[in-house]
Image (cartoon, rainbow, N blue to C red; front, side, top):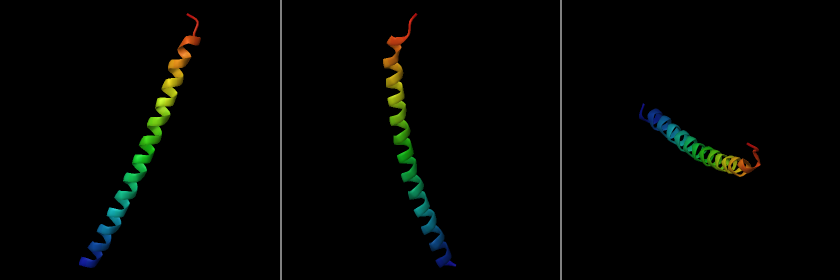
Length: 50
């Protein structure tokens, strides 16, 4: 019984680490895209005729 728990905990730990890395990568990529699009919006303000 202890071996089964040991294997399940190992799998869960590895899965949590993998999801953590994926979350960090997605978060950084999303942040960079938001900064770029925000900069484009700010620089495009001067092209609007009021």
